[in-house]
Image 1 (cartoon, helix red, strand yellow):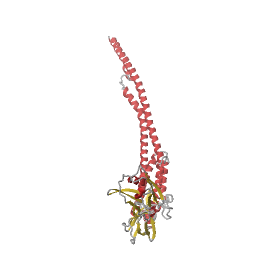
Image 2: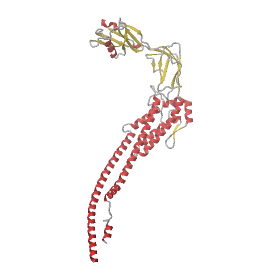
Image 3: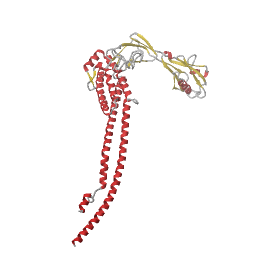
Image 4: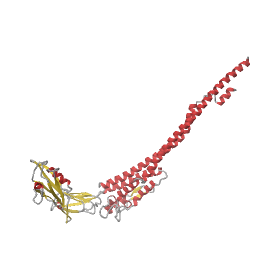
Length: 455
């Protein structure tokens, strides 16, 4: 009877209270930690998706901008004789708007003079002042005790900011001074002095230096129209083209023109659609995971609006939709190659201008932004401080930090709970030991009573 009562109370069941505490603590901790861990994992996935979308946006804008800046999508100048001149393209060159004949009759040169005196560059040459005049602007050159030498005179001229370069060349018995001014006939110069000791290093009004060559302007004609420039690099005559004059060749006309990279333009249009769609998908993925924020969806709409945005001041072809780029029902882009081919056949210059817009007094980033500038503006706005991507990124980072704090608090509470269980079940073990001792004593007494009754 007593044995069955003890068993029903569990006194003889050998309960493992340590394992019981472990199991109860785990049962309390596991679902809470699992829930927060899942939320943290989901938040990390959002952070990763946002980072991928940002990388795709920046890569898209940067690669397109690089192609525009390095001239990949720009018409390329052609020159019939590159021994006379060369040409490079700049923003706005249009292959079908320029072809001309250039004749170079004279190159721009800088005035040079050299001293007849060959001297020790460190030896004293005499103290005094000299006046260096370039294009009517005078600078005072002072020679004193600290710089009384040919080397000191050279350094003083170079430090004057007059635009004349002084240098020394070794000659038998010492060094000779050479002066060279800026190119162009307006930049002729004189170096005069009232100090007799310095007269040998002066030029003009009886100075002792000798003229090597005079300053001259470049002289050339374009289709018979005469031009004169102070430099042999001419950027302001042919729109979108920089000319470098190499030699004078009177009576030797050179034909210049430009060829358009049609295949590269077509490939770039196709690539634009493909890369845009990749970006769109990454943004859509980030948007779907970023919670209640609508910022990324606004960014998607801004990108979608590029298709119909006016990118140049051309009256006929000035939007991506004009060259066959359109939107599908799911928000991606598609390309109508037949429409693109027709646009290139009709007005290839206008198509090129979408990627390589003109830049002059009347064509600027406001009137003719071009696709690269428009995309850069969207990118810069999105990634700027407090821009949409910055805001979403900060929100996700804050949530990540909050979840980490929540998990830390859960662990602290569960540690306290486990400690309470250990204390409670430690007391149970003590009571159970006492009950078992009492049980053993009662069983012994009952057995003794039974034996006495039998006797």
